[in-house]
Figure 1 (cartoon, rainbow, N blue to C red):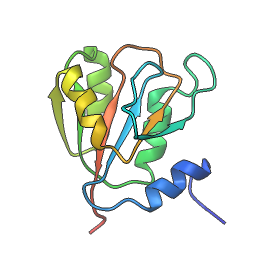
Figure 2 (cartoon, rainbow, N blue to C red):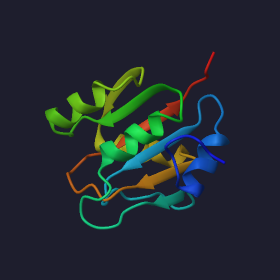
Figure 3 (cartoon, helix red, strand yellow):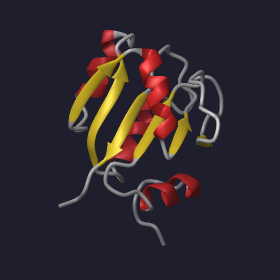
Length: 127
């Protein structure tokens, strides 16, 4: 029986399969998902779950080496992302962020409705 916080079976299985450098995108409800990229849709209703609820839970399971955000994100969003232990954080245009998402193993869709509330996480290693 799983003893950690992540109960969503599809997301838990995905994270367990991650290797060094694999990319996971956690996005708001409006982030376009590139064709061919797996989608794990957690959205229940507007704002639920919020991106930080999902991010904090994912960070409890996944070692993250670095992350990227869209530079258009509001300063309070950038600050909240930065206060988590996610390694080096790169800012890029939203267009570049969407292009980067094509390499993701999956995009996790949340119920977050704030614009540009998206983060790309690159898996690290535990040693």
